[in-house]
Image (cartoon, rainbow, N blue to C red; front, side, top):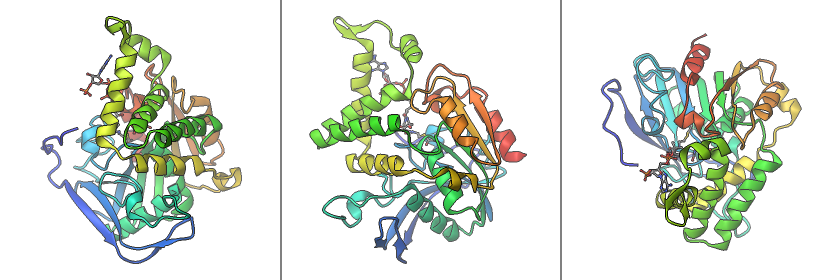
Length: 324
Ligand SMILES: CC(=O)SCCNC(=O)CCNC(=O)[C@H](O)C(C)(C)COP(=O)(O)OP(=O)(O)OC[C@H]1O[C@@H](n2cnc3c(N)ncnc32)[C@H](O)[C@@H]1OP(=O)(O)O
Ligand SMILES: N[C@@H](CCO)C(=O)O
């Protein structure tokens, strides 16, 4: 997606790239140095900030993918708040990626969501931020739970949208099939298939019945050319090694009930009525383990990706929770 023009309401937007030279111990037992973090900030720097945690293929450029949420009078309001979003460790949008980390056992270093939270803590220290409210969706929502476990001293409130407290066999299975496709056809073709599998889980039968009915060309169902197009789009903008690293980190995120019950921070957990990847009952039941979680459900037919494409009343709900 080409960069959008700088919005008028956001005079302080900038990109910061942090280099952390001190060693950081990762969950796999390896200490890494020279970690790079690419981030966008919106609004004037303050000690208290709102941290946005992006989804699997997202970037730190929130203004490019979450316009309903960022802006004056919106949940992420740079005229009132210091808003930060960083590309995750292991991503491919400016932060240190798998190819830049040492291999472990001949394979790319395994990364965890807690490792990503630790890198985030270093970023906040660099920016002079002492307290955050966090908002994450999808992988970013799981990462929010990792923050609550890893950095409870920093987080005041958390909004978790369309995300489970741990990855289910169903979600791991989908990722397993995606990684098998990448392994079977490295170099880009497998990543396209991985995206096709993922897109089926990001929407819903009803969504596709509405948006992709009939044929695109004689003999070609619309959904078929749609999935091919989505595969091509991801292959053009994403790295297969990051895809493997990030999906592995999500699959490995398995906090115990006891750990989740120890979270004292107020949480708003949002389920999406038609989400087949993380069904709303799973989101609600997981959040119920937390002593201070409330649940709200977004009524959309468009499945998991509704937080990006059919947010409805979600921005108002998030604003109300963050400001309460
Ligand atoms: C909290 C977070 O961090 S979320 C992270 C944000 N994620 C990202 O920014 C990256 C991920 N982005 C996305 O997943 C997407 O941009 C979404 C979900 C926001 C929207 O998906 P889109 O692909 O833009 O929308 P949609 O599903 O309607 O598809 C539209 C595209 O498919 C094409 N298309 C639609 N139907 C068909 C068809 N039958 N055959 C071929 N092409 C088709 C359209 O022409 C359009 O193409 P273009 O994007 O090249 O212009
Ligand atoms: N469609 C979004 C959400 C996936 O969880 C993405 O590609 O990152």
